[in-house]
Image (cartoon, rainbow, N blue to C red; front, side):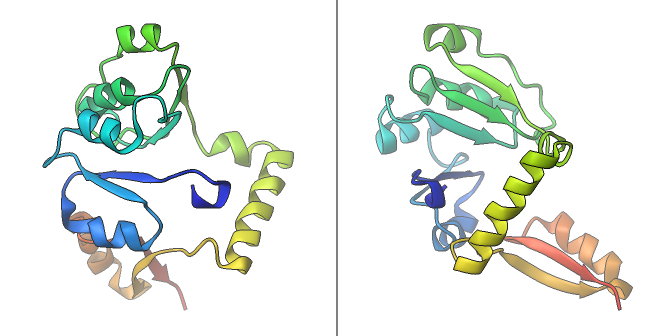
Length: 165
């Protein structure tokens, strides 16, 4: 978000990862289990300034996200991590003329022009240092079971890398 001039507001379930999210570029962190998500988002950005939302969770978080968005905003749903149903916020979508859009990585990988542009963007960011991947822990392939346990613990911040010799 910072690369393109946007202000990143990270939403996390608890405040346990707050410090790491701030370290990696979030301007604000909202812990949805501890705070009223809609009210906090409106306090941070005002209802007219949340124009784009990226959500990988879905479920009950969908309603407060759309309620906090600006008129004409775009919500991009790129995952369904919540096991709970995702109710469609009909009245918020109508009243605010929101665009709700699904996204899968195949949209980029299936289009050679978009894929090359994405590669260039990522490589430029890595080379300039404006993109810094967060690696939580690295495991040799022989410790794949431990790597999976670490993933299931949800204690990590960043990617889990498994190396193959």
